[in-house]
Length: 245
Image (tube, rainbow, N blue to C red):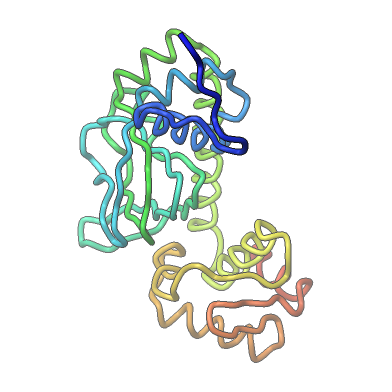
């Protein structure tokens, strides 16, 4: 059989299945949860992953629903929140791609412990619970990596509970702004959530958040322009974040 060479600079045309599998593999490799896994381990997950898209404000799953599987956020961001019996929401975390949600129920067999809603258009890869457990049995390092992420999230939630129990709203807001600055690696950063969402995260109402932000501005601690926030007096903001004894 005579092989016809491809024109210089051209690439071979891959079947659609292999193209999508390569995209999934590349997306999974960007997620910290799987960063240290081998090619074969990532490939095993990619073969079982199904793409799911969500519009802004669309719920990925509700608190209390049986766990169907794990969601890997490859584009966009989601809000993790709890809802009180009266219907009041409290935001636990804001997760931006690349990230994972719903790791814990994969192991304890319980329902989803919180709800997750898309903040902006989201592209996710969903892996069925039984498929994920099969991969973990085949590749134990996958389970160890997931448990590390679960442990990190548990520590974060312990911090949220501690802050809610012992800190004032003013102190919690100051700490949240400092943490956002540290995560961005700069004193000036985009605040990706509204005053209402800040209030939800802090367990208070929007008016209290707006009043505290206005005071921070008046005292020269921060500057706000649109969604852009700049910390102008870090030492002063850190004093506000200190527990009041």
